[in-house]
Image: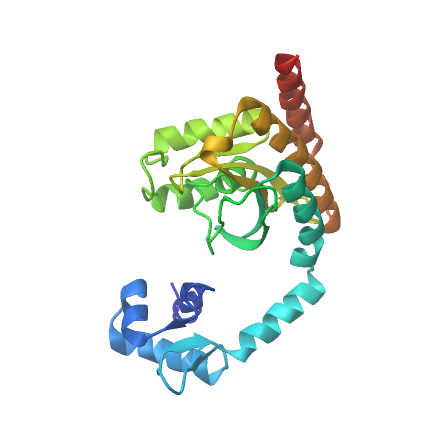
Length: 267
């Protein structure tokens, strides 16, 4: 990893839950010595990507990042193109809907929308979605570049007793996703969360991310899951369209087969 990459990697440790981080904490997270970490932070601070709180001396995101985020959204309007369909999806299924974008081999959370139907809701608090432990990650592995599997294998970490913690079980889950067109994570990341996801595409014709529904696990029934999949397909079509893409015919055929089978079973 280059010096530039190591410096920029530090920005990934900041989040809404952790807006400020001290030098020692960043060293522990990055697993680097203090001198090296300080040098990287100083370079980022000089360019405006981070700044120090004058009172606590902890680091926080700087104004340069905000400018780049505005430029990104203005030129590649990912978030604005997803919010409308997410709201519709959340209200249609009564659960939390969220969207992620794939950058390189990392799946980044972009936006989420909670339904007003229940007082108890699944909370999506991830900045980066583990490829092996989330429904969105399984979609990325199933319909994205084959090199993503190597990244998933190297990053396997156990979050719950249901996490896919070995390559064999992960490959089986990916194979199932390729068969149905939908990724499923049954409490793989959170003990009380059941996730279902569908892939999203952009103007490049390649996988751009995934749209998902996170439900409180004990609310999931076969009928509820089937309803979520129906509305996920609609949301994926809408978001892909807003991002300048279309759903590949092969994936649309998988959805049709899965949804038709579920409809016949219900009848």
